[in-house]
Amino acid sequence: MLSKRQEMILQAIIEEYIKTASPVGSKRIQEVISMDVSSATIRNESAFLEETGFLEKAHTSSGRAPSTKGYRYYVDNLMKSNDMEEAKKQIDEIFKKRGSTIDQVLEETSRILSEMTNLAAVVSRENSNEEVKLSRVELIPLSSESAVVLFVLSNGQIENKAMNLDTVTLEELKISIDLFNDRLKDSKLSEIEFKSQAIVPVLKQQVKKYEFVLQTFVNALLHTGSPQAKTSGVKYLLQNPEFNDPEKIKKIIEFMETASPFAWFKSQSNSNNKAAVAIGFETGIGNDDIAVVGTNFPTEGGGKGTLALVGPKRIQYDKVSDLLEWISQKIEDKFNGGE
Image (tube, rainbow, N blue to C red; front, side):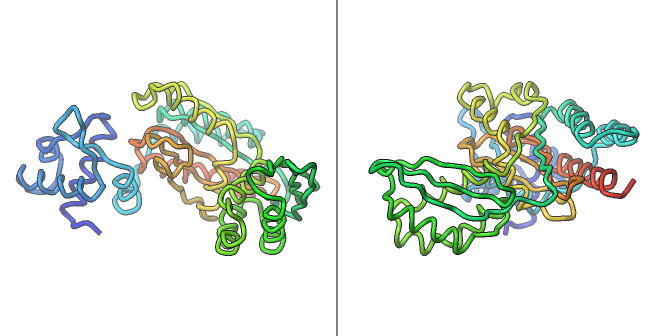
């Protein structure tokens, strides 16, 4: 843990960087920090925070910017609730409309969220009466070079995945499938990614490219049981200077167009509408400049949905988290017996 003074300096740098997107120098820190500290002390503490990975030195400036580690520490230890009253006022009017479906409410809410936060909003929602589970996995050899793995789900749906036997042998596939059937049968799809880690010690002893096999199976199951995500406000996201690289833009848009990444939020967020945060490489898209804040909400049929905001790492985490948790509770109240 950092000292109180180090925490205050880190918090000041992060909150100033969120506002300006520019590296923060010791003089500016001294102006905003609520503690009587000399410039020399601030420089020394900032150097320590840089050495320990909480800050990054800007190449073109004497100031410093937060690292992913710094943002994570801020979210976990320093962030305070900070209401967005105007956004709440507008969204509250949406929920007061009688006869609105959950899809209509989510669409209008997402639009306002994007406009008020300058972030992209993403909604991923299940419609089934009960969450889909994995019934069994089967293997169909096609030739000496290929095979197909079938994933059979509790709702009768079947996903097939072609496998190249140059990458993994037929025997290794059989071992992997037996483990999945033995350990993960009847698991909810939203739990598969996390439960599958329990079979890694056994799998790695018998399958050479066990990580490839495990990730292939998990990705196939996440894709099978997930609905398509709906996005709004991408234009706001792309206005941020962090995203002026076409390749980064492509990855971000692909990330938002699939529901699979939001399985993470379905497992992280608990039943009391708590927001979860993924920062930088934690999002799994190979882009350290992005962050996602999301929360779950229950749907009418007993399923689960996720509402998330996507933006640069300098998202106003306190405001966004508070707003998403408030919206999640509003959805639960309106569509699950509260209003």
